[in-house]
Image (cartoon, rainbow, N blue to C red):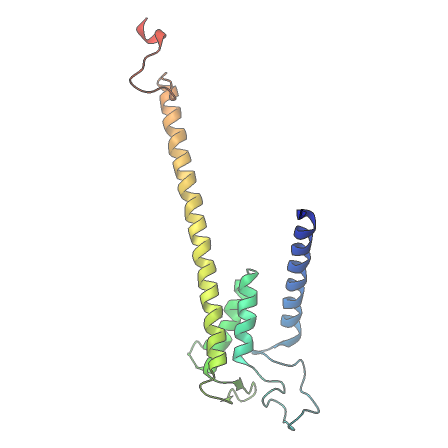
Length: 183
């Protein structure tokens, strides 16, 4: 027989650890305009020698940002998802651009480079967007169900109160009369 006490403890630890990890990612690699793939520019790279802000040396990868958005949406961090999606899809002055279609972006020149169209980036961002939209839809549906229940409950209570105010019994079928009604 399985016991639940360890399971909820595990889920709490997992949830807390994940939130701490996402906070560390934000603190360590979200630099000014972009979430970058490294904290600092690497002095040595391999197997190729890469200049700073080239490929995996302190650049922005839209596909990894899509995965980060997906993780954040699963833990309700929609504000951060909005910030990240804005980095992928629009500039600061709200002009759209297509960074999602490229493998990586130089954060200094804002030049998108690498494979085009980079399907991994497109897929990662698409999955994150669908997940976020599904979660919003679920929240709206559960909110609507709660509102419907409370409206029905309020209507029922109002009907009961009206009947009590009129001196009638609300739980008695209308065609049956009590002995007192005949007096």
